[in-house]
Length: 438
Image (cartoon, rainbow, N blue to C red; front, side, top):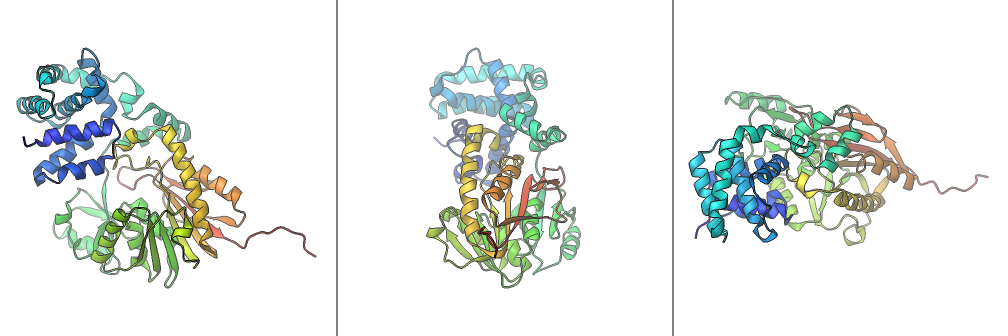
């Protein structure tokens, strides 16, 4: 039996519930066999459910007489998909109920047809009431309690705004390839086509009023523009690459920073990432933009496996992190992360920081970035790094938008602007070997 797009949606949500993989990977896997219109519907359902996850969980528990057995959790996913479509997407009620009832058969639970039918019809009757009711902070903000608490503690003046921003659709921002066209000329070009846009905060950034598909994006195929959030664009601007410098972009995929650096200067870039598959995405972007870089698949924390003993003049190190600054783009982050996984990430960051530092030349620049808003991964991580390395000197960052902390700039997600991002710029001085002068 051919699966409907709604059966695929239920399977994606079920896999997320058991944390089998992340949302993007799951959607790509299921979308392979779908037509374009169904791919769009699949993405809308799954992304929307992740944004309303805790609220939907509460509604489901109110509609079910008793919890489902562990082996029948696919039914929970079917119910949540149906509730989301009925309550948030405005889909035709009869068609939605009928198709999700059929999905129970597709998923090997024909005995549950009556259950799913009853639950969805009950939701239709009580829709307004159930959507209004939110009985906990988790359902009010659609974030896990541990994350609400940590954001509230660390950003007492901003926490509500951050949680709101995490639940909305992000802006679409472009990076104009200055080697091909100026930002002003590109803006004039797309405005002549009736596309509304404005300048972003980064020197090459353009914010679109409405998102576009790649096929409709003027100049994309010819390498005039790329899609890159402006907070990410600021990383290359802060590093300020120079001609002939040897620069490492560590943890580089999908390659936005690598390509931006090469658009800005004739530098020699090494793009390093642990995933061979993700490196292929960098290669695709380089080819499209007419740029060249050395690509290496290796673990950044094990320099003996990739470093040629030639020191770098500058390094961008985009650390693996909780991704709490990009929840609006990756709404499943709130499900996939935990306090336990955060501790593990901090340990991994420490190893990568110390290893990459060894490859930097004296006098070199070391830019540490994350797409996190948590001080444990940002300011506190840099403080501990400086305590370990007496040859590391903190350098002030001028011009980048965000909050000045003692150890770098923290940008929080903003409605029309960039994602949550952290930047800390360090300078490598001559090592202090101690000793007494004569």
